[in-house]
Length: 227
Ligand SMILES: O=C(CO)[C@@H](O)[C@H](O)COP(=O)(O)O
Ligand SMILES: [Fe+2]
Image (cartoon, rainbow, N blue to C red; front, side, top):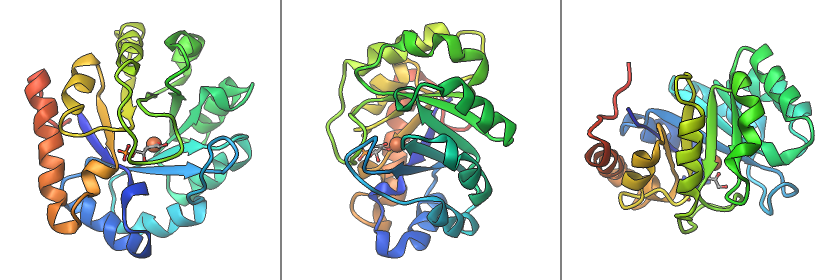
């Protein structure tokens, strides 16, 4: 079962509400929201006010990817804004275990993200604390970058490490109809796609999503619907 989570970082920011609604109606399973602080990553996107403003646009899972350091002072604000899952980077600070505890205490799914240069072993002590592991397949900070194939080795390692546990594995960065298959085969259960989902404008969203979903299904034999 592979879910598709379009990243609204690639949407038209002047019409973010309409875009969120359109991509949800086009078949997105989750909505991925990339939060960047200009400190942990060299780009600034948006904060909890935007998440809150978008919340009424859809009832899809809001998958909030925090590329901020420190994250802890803002976790409650994102939970209150309507996040369903909150992912923090293992590289973002010395107290990742505390961040995950806080996310769970807020009643949200707790995610931990790994940059392409971080080994899978970095999250091994955290497995009891996470519902989601996000493996970056680009260096975080920008949409539209090329997929880093070597990160699939990390996906495979995380898959082995999480066997028998109810933990999703998300891949994020450079996911297209070409890279979705290898990512799903390596063990991804959630495919985050920005540029490839939003390319061509609203008339193309359904076809874009269908193409990525079909590539994952062809590679794994699983459809994109999870009960
Ligand atoms: O977290 C990030 C980037 O830091 C991603 O979620 C990107 O927004 C995905 O965009 P594409 O690589 O699919 O264009
Ligand atoms: Fe992301």
